[in-house]
Image (tube, rainbow, N blue to C red; front, side, top):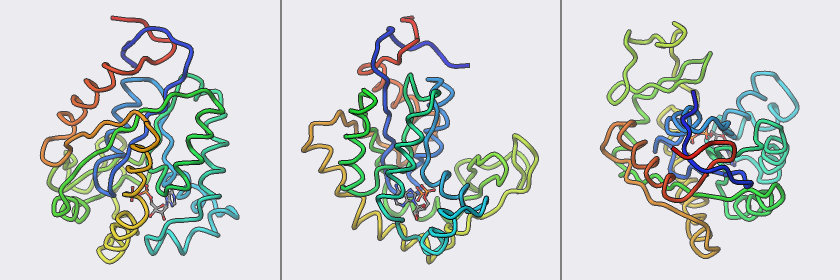
Length: 237
Ligand code: ADP
């Protein structure tokens, strides 16, 4: 059930979850979905879904994703443009894993203006060594997408999803050499996007996401969001 967190306003909110692979974007996005009652838009999940369904898009990105390389900007821009036009995005949405390049960020600002959405960027800061150890222990449920971690978020029964009992798997691009490539791509292409956000005056919050449990990090995000945004269709408490 979505909590009621703000005054009723006209503008939809776009919460942009920004951070390195393994910074907890996906986990925090899922908590935000529950709290705000708006959908999570994960470009990584959308692309994996295309691969599973064997679509033309899926086939065109398979090799890139397997090696941890970013897929072309135009492709993800188009996926996001189509997705945010859907009716369930009317009150707002959470962008998880997008934008990842400055070109994508520029296009995103244009797309948000097009649907009248106000942006809030949540920048998750995590120490590099912690990222590496987190990604090594990462497992995912192939059915519902819930992420687990051997150290920080173990399932109740080892290797089994708490929610649907499916056997957890290591995502193909979580293998060590691919993780290294994903982190290199982040440093080269994605980190500069923060400067773009700062220069363009976007609302941006740095959140320490290094050591504390996901619920504690989420508490910080909630405080920040309560102080700045209201989600349409909700009532003040
Ligand atoms: P993570 O955030 O854990 O690195 P994702 O699931 O978000 O993983 O992304 C997995 C892969 O999907 C990336 O390594 C990249 O190949 C592709 N991808 C996802 N989002 C984008 C994007 N916005 N731009 C380019 N490539 C993307």
